[in-house]
Length: 192
Image (cartoon, rainbow, N blue to C red; front, top):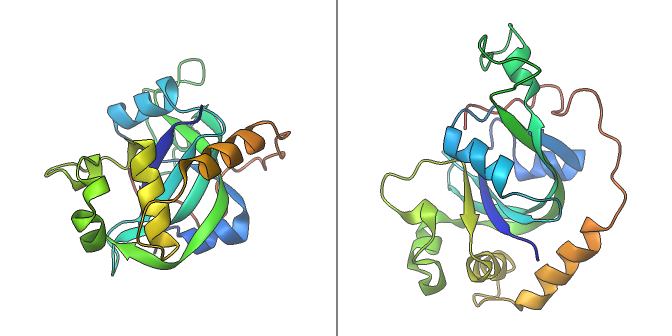
């Protein structure tokens, strides 16, 4: 059974349109232990996520992605030229992880944060809690489906069966080979 996630990124750094164009990318530059632990301990291939545009006008849910490979060593920690370089981290025992994600769908319009706040099905969502600044958070399946329904313009939660079935079908696919650089050139995200 897949799990569900919300992954935040600033669209001027990397957007849902960029992911749609690229098809697949590494979700790197995460420098938060709780998020790292989500990737390491809970995320699995085939999980679905909401791609959320943060610090945008408007901030909100922009589309859906799928986790292809979780818990990979983040290469930016080893690059002395990267602002995310961590000199204490080693290749044998990397401190920071990333996940590889692929495009599933882009919503016709971003579902603004203000709309998410008034949706009863989303009342318990972590991103709506005061002081929550995590860039990757777990979602309940009902929260994921409510956001997906809002993104499709239906205004009511979609059938949970459709997302679970599509995630299961994809998880059985053979993986597409990744390039040596998991994030497209120029697509480095700001710290998560």
